[in-house]
Structures are given as structure tokens and as C-alpha cells.
Amino acid sequence: MLYNSASEWRDASNKHILLFGMSGLGKTYVSNLLRAQGDWFHYSIDYRIGTRYMGEYIADNAKAEAMKNPFLRELLMTDSIYIGSNISFENLTPVSTYLGKPGDPDKGGILIDEYRRRQDQFQRAEHDALLDTGYFIRRAKALYGYSNFICDTGGSICEWVDPTDDKDPIMTALSAECLCIWIEGSDDHIDELCRRFDKAPKPMSYQPAFLSRAWDEYLAEKGVAQDKVDPDDFIRWTYRRALDHRQPRYRAMAEKWGITVKAEDIYAVKTAQDFDDLIARTLEARA
Image 1 (cartoon, helix red, strand yellow):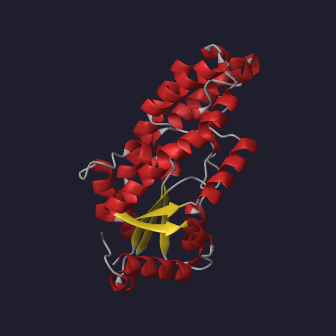
Image 2 (cartoon, helix red, strand yellow):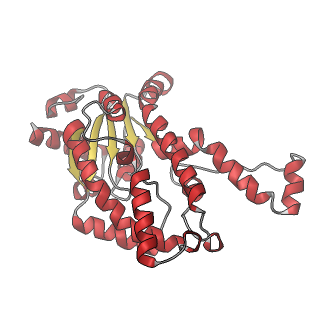
Image 3 (cartoon, rainbow, N blue to C red):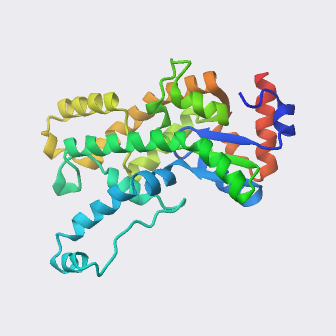
């Protein structure tokens, strides 16, 4: 690891960290806090995906919908209007909307073959965005003079990492650049995430093998055809299974390439100094 003790962490003139874990446990909260209060550059993987790697897909999808409207079609064909996504760190809706939910198109779903194609696009985009981390560390220092760097990853990072491989290319590259920190949620946190998701189910990305298994099991259990699946019902049904699938993968990543902090300790962080102290205590305990 870049910092093997509390003293190494405290004495470092350039602190580089990467946060990973389930969405909703504080990665972006801490990233925004450090950006606002300290000398930290915030690199958002999801923002990079939406602007650099999937921006054209998102815009083209919106244009395809607009082309169905004769009025908008005429304006587009004459270059009279421009359609683009307004992605920000706080609003990543264009990415999730493009990913969509599989199922009945009449209920807002996407047929499974198209859904899988978009999932594949997202996997490639996230892979490339993660491997851009080192470039952004150097860019943040050279252009803006930032000494400290935080990489705010998406919840699906564990889907593309092989935690059993000591030489996994993604984690080998990331751990060489950053201290990798898993934010671990308790059973109560997971239950709360499930309650939130049930109220407002949002598109997710899945490991291909997991998606195929979940899709087949859902169809068999519900006894429905692929094109008649209720999209929201499927992703609600899948959510807890996805969290249970991801939790041991996160844990193995932390054991091999980083450290673990509890979600409740992240929630207690109110200042950049609080965060420094938390990481120092964690490193000291690990040693």
C-alpha cells in the first residue's frame, strides 16, 4: 500500500485515496467534503463515464427519441437544435437512464438483448475510467496544483475485478496510485439501502454471469415471458441479491489491496481533519 502506517499517512505531502463500496454509504459525501474543505481533487468515475466514455451513446439515444417527433425531427435534421446531457457530480441521471431496466417496453423497459448491449458498453466504460485514475492524479497536480486526490468509484467496481487474482490488472494499477478504502456497511445499513431502493428503484450495472443467472431465475419464478417482465419489479427483486453478491467481493478487495472503514465512521466525518484522523487510526489498527 502507499501508506503502511499512521505516520506515513500523516507525513505524506501528497495523499491519494480511492473509495469503493456500495452506493449510498458515503463515498460521494466524503469526496464532496474533502473537495470543499481541503486541498483535494475529486475524480468521479461515474462522471468520467458519462462525459468521456458514454456521452455519445447517451446523446444519440436522446436524439433517437426526439426523431420520433416530427417537429423535433425537422429541427434536428436542419441543425436547428442541439441535444446533449447535462451531467454533473450531483446529477448522473443521464447515465442511469441510458442503462435502463430490462423488461416490457410498454412499462418503460428495454428488451434484454439491447439491455445486455448497454451493460457491456458500461463495463468497458467503467474499466477505462478506472484506469484513467493515474492520469488524473498527474493532471490534477500539473494543471491545478492539487496535492491530494480522491477517486470516487461506482458501486459496480467489484464486478470487473477478480479478487482471487493477486495480479488483477484493475486493482494492481489502482493500488499503485492510491490507498484503496472499502466503506463497509452493516446489515442495518444494507437493510436501509434496500428500503430506499424499493421506494425508488434505479438502474444498475451487473456482472454478465450474475445478470444471466438472476434473469433466468426471475423468469422461472414469476412465469413470465422476457418481453412482459415488469422492469421495476425485476430490479427490486434483484437488488438484495446483487448486494449479497458484491459484499464478499468488496471484502476480498480490501483484504488484498487496501483497508476497511465502517460506514458509521464515515457518517461521523464532518471535516477534512476528521477524515485524516480516521484513516490514521485505521492504518494504526491494521498494523
